[in-house]
Image 1 (spheres, rainbow, N blue to C red):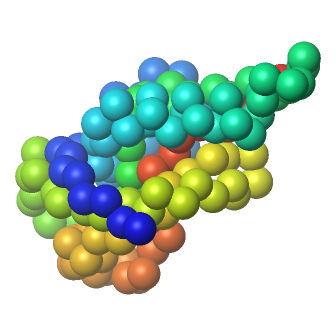
Image 2: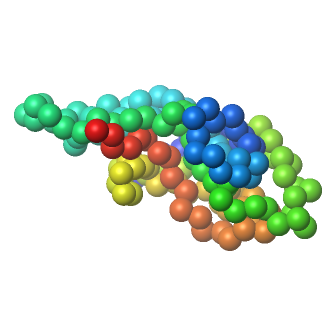
Image 3: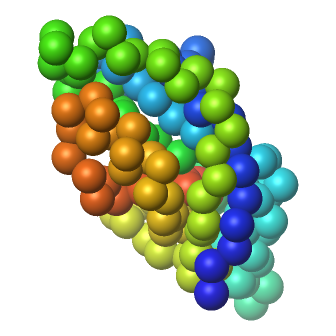
Length: 141
């Protein structure tokens, strides 16, 4: 099952405590914090620390809030596309997210589908079909 939501497109977001990468080429969609809180509750309650377990892992929620990463700062936008940077700043993006929680390494996520985000990536000279997801949190001990 897929649910629909909207968020704001943010270029080069302020990310206190972020890993120092090329922070210039970060692009994210802000996700409503209530989505993160809802799924974090169920992961904590049913998966990480079920009532019958005395000790378990701790779910650490994203330090910059809920977001969908469109570009993660690891790859520069090529010079011929840089004039398009911030073209869609603050645009409201409609996306769909799956209610099926997945785990990627230590991260708990909700898969996302959004053709608009693929279009923006392609316009910046990057590949389509990026693995979009909402990060709910990560295992911390």
